Image (cartoon, rainbow, N blue to C red):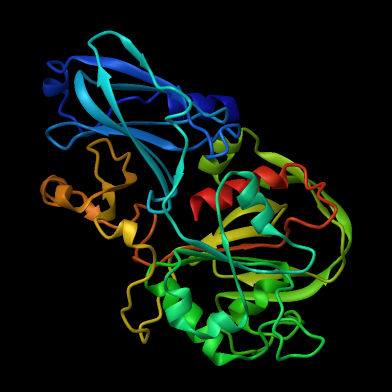
Length: 386
């Protein structure tokens, strides 16, 4: 069933927003290649690969789990765009010439995903997401817990990874973030203005408050209230067998839809309650959510402040409208926006109702033993799609 889904997603090489009568007159060729992370060895599935013609029509496809893609594109000189997530954080642009009824191959050295985002992380204990970031060939800057109290510091980043067990030096013998209202306020403003965060296990305290960890479903004072998410530190050391990747796009990108997850420590944070209209479940065991995300968080009291790297100042994320209803999220140069708007595109992700960044939460993480199995590719997917 999964294989059929992958074939269905990736065989679509054109844009169904193009008028059928017009498309018959368009001469096309094929562009093929393979998407890699910056390290040149890790293939990237689920990347959108597209070109835009002179009428601002988008021809697109997606890379398979092995990174390969095959795109039907209009004849002539064009730019091949490769993006993950919404395209703001990781993207590559390659000039190509498409010849009628011929196949053009893109060299692997040219189809590596470039890092546009500035990434930060707070050091954790028994959790090192930065090790996976580095292994993919990307860079992340370490910031301290105290840096989270300074919005001018964190606003220069696009993504902040909050490792399980990241430490607040002001709390002797305990971990962050306590009930530090300045940290909660800054993270709330950061996300509302387009920044994205990743939290794992005990870092749930950054979302709802807590000391070492979230001990139970009661009021702590984070920026998410208990109607949105509720945790208890009641997880046991165990192997979770036959977990499901419930997001179809993610499963297609990874090339698998089931996995076993090792929880090699007790007291990990179990999700007791979540708002299904706010969160999307990505990985679960039975009915128990293990990994969730949202791009629907908005703090209406937060000031409007620029967040992220200046490299994105002339780019914007849009939902490209197709007549067949297969809308796609892409990032384009702002100069092209008026033409896209004229045929029904709108600003923002197709899957969200706000311009906020993403919040990812995972009950599992990159634990010290290093033997994380298929959870490793899932964390790689998170990094590239934040």
